[in-house]
Amino acid sequence: MTEPKIADSALDLLFRRARSFNDFTPQPVTDQELRTLYDLAKWGPTTANSQPQRLVFVRSAAAKERLAPALSSQNRKKAMNAPVVAILAYDMRFYEHLPRDRKS
Image 1 (cartoon, one colour):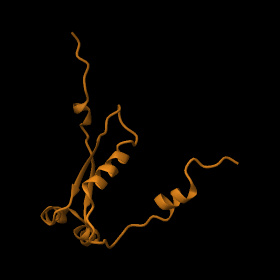
Image 2 (cartoon, one colour; image 1 turned 135 degrees about the vertical axis):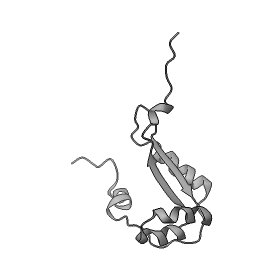
Image 3 (tube, one colour; image 1 turned 180 degrees about the horizontal axis):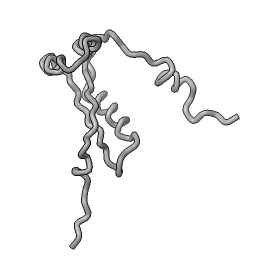
Image 4 (spheres, helix red, strand yellow; image 1 turned 180 degrees about the vertical axis):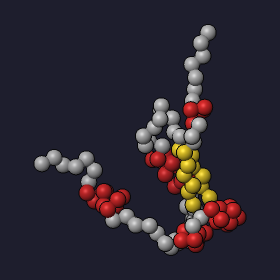
């Protein structure tokens, strides 16, 4: 039998036993933790070796208040109490930012 490439314990942690959090500690999320998270996410599948994913990290109470009307009633309280909220989007016109070959 072939061993899995990813250990079952890692698959359990990431997928099988993972659950959404409803409460958060007051411990802040550091800039370095957010950079580390982004550095992992950027290695996912790409389009033309580009990254059409766009991320916004929302931390301040004022920014969360601006975000609140866009959230469902089930998620609003969780987001307002989280140390950081990540907004993930897809740039539908990402190709406009790709380098182009210049012909002489």
